[in-house]
Length: 76
Image 1 (cartoon, rainbow, N blue to C red):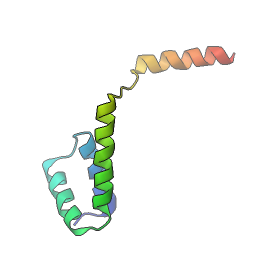
Image 2: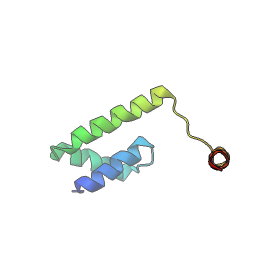
Image 3: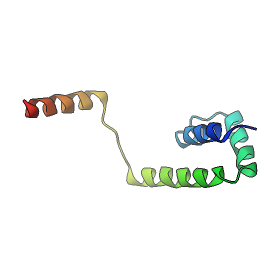
Image 4: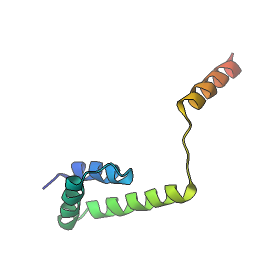
């Protein structure tokens, strides 16, 4: 059986659709046995759902660099 720490990492990978089939099966087995991790998994799923509904977007690297430069210019 995997540790709770490993289960949390797999749960986070699932959020980004990066978990392998074996990791998914290991997590499902762990969630059947552990009393604490199902709550974490549920909250993580809710968070993912909320983020998808919010249509969050991150800045591109180019946009981050431009913003950093603009902030530095303001502080001068």
